[in-house]
Amino acid sequence: MLSPGKDARMLLFCISLAFNSTELVLYWLTDRLIFDLPHSDCTNGWHRYRTGCIKFFTTSKTRSEARIHCAGFKTSNDIQGDLIKIPSSVDNDQVVSLAPQTGRYYIGLTDWANEGVYRWKGRNDDAMYFNWKPGYPERYQIEENRDCVVLSTNADATYKMWTTVECSNSWSFICECESACIWK
Image 1 (spheres, one colour):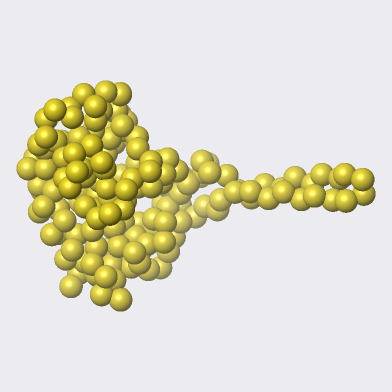
Image 2 (cartoon, rainbow, N blue to C red; image 1 turned 90 degrees about the horizontal axis):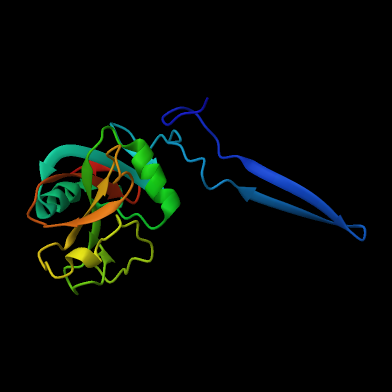
């Protein structure tokens, strides 16, 4: 059985169809078999994620403290780390599968700049994918202090889901770098 952290490959499927002596071959990768593939650049607790690396920190910090901590890492091109961006359900599943323990983790999504408009890392990068717990964020829109978002890895009804929280609350967090990270 394959499991996260072990050598694994995405499954490549192929279908060959013949129409009037013309062969059509279709290839695709599964979108649900996601594993932490070994990558020499992601070391010391960092995991391969999209084109870069992520690391889970279980020390509780406010969102501002977490961003400062993530910015303490940089790539070889001097690009600072930041809180993670999760742009798809496949990415969300991968992140949850890599979590070292259950809990809630700050991610880089916020509506600080414009209430109800969620952007990644406070920039003009509007979020297109969401995995809200039912009732969020609408249920708490009137509470303007709930501008930050956490991802739950708890094995309960919130598993893999996002909820809004006050940014001054302390939570675990996930840092992301565009490539291998080092402490500056």
